[in-house]
Amino acid sequence: AAVQEYHFPYPPDANPDPALVEFADKATRAYMDYVINKNKDRYNNIAVLNNYLMPGSEAAVLMQEIINDIYWNNEYDTREDQVEVQAVRTYSEKLCTVDVHFDTVLTKAEAGTRNEYISTIRWTLVNNGWGWRATSFDLFS
Image 1: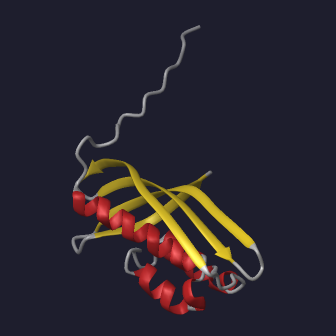
Image 2: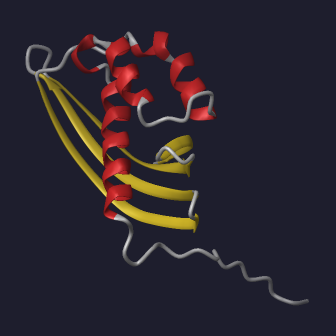
């Protein structure tokens, strides 16, 4: 029997567009602010995140649907973020994916707690003529 080999046809871009890298970085930081309920202001946080999402898309609908689940996050004393855009794959002038790794540490001195959120988010981005917007995303541990 023949051996099947699978090759991902789109390697990461050698020189990704700096504006696209910046967009993915900012979208990821806005996502992090929202899911950890920065300043206990989930409505402002979703408004900022929506600047990076395609209206009506899977990503925008999901983020709106979970807004009541966001409320439980407590205030924290310190926050450290590390965000790294790891791979941009361009499929056409209007479609790409961007992998962004993030590591966020939240501490609350009074409770003696430390929470660390580590993941990689893969944004699927579409350029609708008005700029790039995320239509969906996947999280990887």
